[in-house]
Length: 604
Image (cartoon, rainbow, N blue to C red; front, side, top):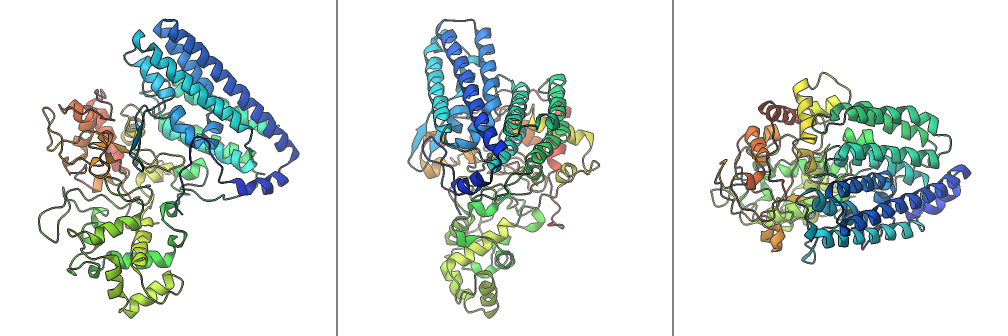
């Protein structure tokens, strides 16, 4: 079921099979609304292009910096109003238009693409601007103009079907929550809350156009959210938890009510399908999206079989170790050690044992992202001479002689007569795909239990997603590096993990991470961004287990990662200046992370 990444610049809609069906069943007013909405989008795009021309003229004309910065902010606000449509139909251009100002590394062909778009321009204007950079900024503006013109031209060939509109609005709520109020989209200009207002205004305008008569039912609740943002405009003090539950969730429900007559379709399947509230509660995630083949889809029989295999020592050549030897349930499927045991040769393996909770909600596996599926990861572990040292096909031969296993495999795999190596790996993967309970105290609070978190913990969440910038890499609600709302790519970061815990004159850990696999300088010391869920139960931390407690982890980030403790790191992706966190703020962040511990005795 692996989804092919969208090619080139245009999003070729995989929802095309719905066009005839929905087009024939759309009401006349919706069809009229669709054309009006497209006209609105063209006009909005023209306004952004006009603002960019003005900004370009100002940059080349040596306009004062404060004026340029204001022009940039105004341009961003116009873009945010139309963002929901642009992001939905043109995924392939998303990173070029509004992605992070970091190189885009293409490991499949060894190419490194420089960053472009709004955030690159933002970096020039809000971080060390000089007149010498005017030509570079102008070039970036022109490239952005070309991309937006491309979007406008090709949007004419798209259909905004009812199910599309319903989905793109809910995706924008997700984007606001995960990428907007966290500061991900505005890392230097610090304009996130204003941009959130613009995004809400935009989807309100879209809904009124698409569904004539919807204005009255939405106006009050949208206005309440906008007033709240206007009256609470301090980014560091903003109560994100309150805004999410008191404003975004009701907004999401109101938009669903307006679109209630939309044709209900599931589409071709993706990593997530559902509305904003579903997303918050961990409902609608599809781990099979990352499985390698359609036949690899999970079913209850596979999960039950996979759990049995997970703890079976016969999968190793020595007959003494299993997956559960390192991934222990009592440690939330980690092992409590700095580095995993080498059960074959003694000593330790190269890296820390990560939790398997939510491992299925990633596009790639291992700290260095070298495996593209859980099946591939199992294959790597089984063939390793330092781990199982037994190929899965050889394990399958052993299991074929076990009548009990043959019955279980037959039930799980459509009455197959024999057991294959892939089926062994797929069953184990199915069990891992079941490990996403979403039943922590944080989840209970989100679901309505207001006693599940106290004031300090809620403040910690607000800091995590705000001032401390944790949420710009560990995206809620999974809190890993897989970017919402499409979830097609798990990110890695270069944060400068030291070889030993030290707050000055530290030395970088010698493990080169993704560079060891891909040999690209931009990936030197890059490691996957794991989930923060269950962190309280999975110490020690980092790929080398260097930090033994969460307080030290927060201190490391507070100081600016490796560069903040004396490590010279060329491509550090983590902000290297201090977060300026107070002692009580650090404690609150740790308190919040402890609310992310799942109840392993209640798998849900």
